[in-house]
Image (cartoon, rainbow, N blue to C red; front, side, top):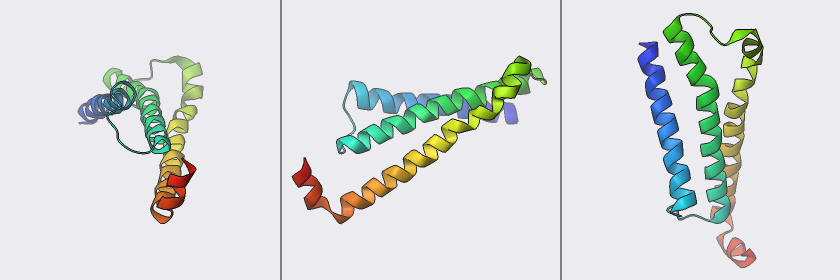
Length: 112
């Protein structure tokens, strides 16, 4: 069950974040103010990094039923939680930005 779950998380995480980045960078498909688009792109990049650092080693370990990446990467495994913290901070920043946009829409249009 965990193996199938991790495969689904990897496919959906990589696919979704890649589609967001392609849609916003190549096709300019996301119609929001520029700072919100930048925050959304950074969240997608952090999600890609989190998926690769967290779920890919977990999938390999579950498939092999043991740790295959050596002692050094086992020691460095604690750093794989950094993208999750970055995502949480970016979501908080984006929420604060949206509140600011809703409270002062006229002032933000004058700044542009």
